[in-house]
Image 1 (cartoon, helix red, strand yellow):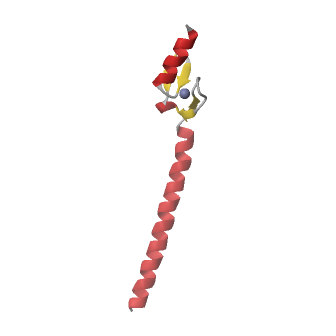
Image 2 (cartoon, rainbow, N blue to C red):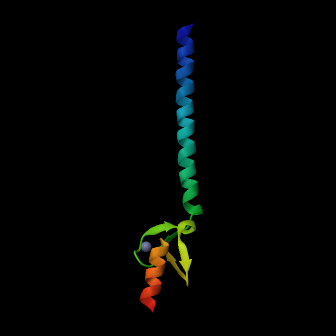
Length: 74
Ligand SMILES: [Zn+2]
């Protein structure tokens, strides 16, 4: 009888692992097209649009690069 419980527990565990693994891979696939990637005008690094700094029609990875670019223009 304990052997049967052990088998049920193992099946439940495998099912749970497969389910959580599938959920994870689905999430990573779904998040890719949702987040648009942009390129820093100064150093060329790629980053999500939501994390970038947009200034005068150009994207930057950080405020330091935005300021450096503005200084070079002048
Ligand atoms: Zn940069």
